[in-house]
Image (cartoon, rainbow, N blue to C red; front, side, top):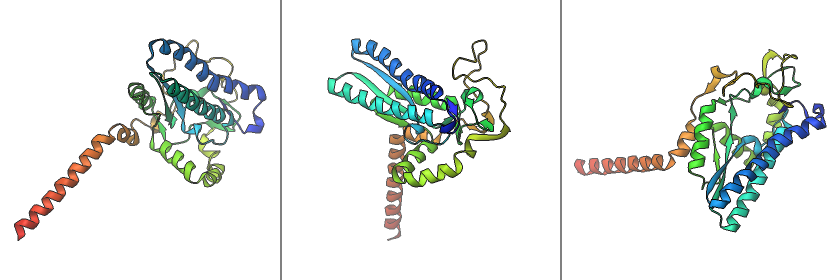
Length: 246
């Protein structure tokens, strides 16, 4: 990706982000679908982002590509439904994640790039993607309270969110540490060919290892059942107390 105001992004850089972030999904989906259609079963899980619905400053190319993935996935899902296919397509919309992406992203910002808080650990996302692969009939999953809040706010008051992000979107994507102009970027070629940097980035100290919102999503039926049982129990206890007092 490229972290910079749109006016500072070269056309070739914008095209590169689009090729990788959007067309990479398209070609990967086509390869998977070719195999799955032969068996008439399978699950395609598209890893999306809250930015598939809500663009933010400094990431115009990335946000545009994620919006494109969203539209492509919706079109494909409709086609598969028309065909009566057994292949399912679902999408997991992510929050900010603590990955090495921000260590080698191409940035023209004065300070080091960072994900917009709150930040979640990669393991939270891995569990969500696995769940989506096992339960692909749901068209979309949201991960993290920030994702849910962003998508709901954008649906209700997009103009207000425009102004809010105009005020906060620049500072929230930068640390206090000055940018290092010598740091390599991976826009055109990998920077991890000789070393395995793992799944975690530089923000372990502030990244969340769990998401209550995701826990509730996967336990909603049980939670609702438990709440109903609790209400029924409270109601029964109240009636019993009234009868005992008369």
